[in-house]
Image (tube, rainbow, N blue to C red; front, side, top):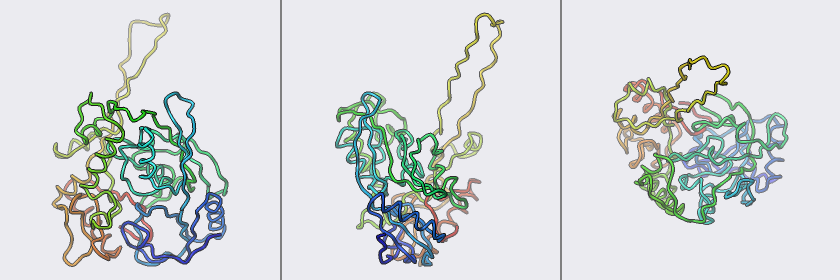
Length: 378
């Protein structure tokens, strides 16, 4: 098994915090990954897996356990049972943005709006990554995973993963444990074959972000280029020369609230319905129709509200930091907490707690962290 000299996690995570773990294993193949996980699980020691390190916030104390680095790589293109579509099976350690670039290069649509998101493919379904109205749940077919409880490898359909807004049954939410403890080995997506031709874009959020009218037709390459440009302007594309990218991306989730609670927020707060209204179809057999049709039940969808807007309008502007602290808000985007130079996890956590308190005091809402927290508390 490829056990290596442990590296400080500050060198392997985009927030740049964390000491060296007690033990580290580099798994470059699927078999190595499965063997490493089974060995760690049998030992009973604390563990976690590490991909791109872009969604982790690690504490200052060395991790007393094993870190398994997922370094697998590769894309397999397969025919889809549906005409005009293609299946891609991608190894968990493959770089996510490299996958998006591959899809765009081959004229495959469905993930282009998620260009520039850091991290690995295996992490994508865990929190159902998304951007500009596109989420992986829209294209995910299935995953291969290995279960901690049995050590067995299984193929699991997307419908069984409980994919929701930045969540799944696999995600370790702050203050809780995953519903299903497992590690993804590969991901299978179904993408639309566009041939690189321009086409109208569905989704109000994506069109608004790109300044498109409903009937404007653009290529997947055009979307990728403009999404990358937008993300760079917000410091959301990793760049060693830009200190605003030393972050875990969006540190807090955009909050999903009831429509009633959303009405208590200022009208200027950006918001989007989480799900569209469903048209109910009522069929009444003619022989039993008595002339009365019961009212159709209606439901009001929950609303996603902008955490960045809430932070800025609680009085915390871009670039905010405490005196002498090396942790601060990005100068480009209020939703990113950044390491401005050898900041400790304690400094970043102090800033995160202060932001939570200000937003709660001003708007009655507690923002939840998006990264996985290891050895650190908010």
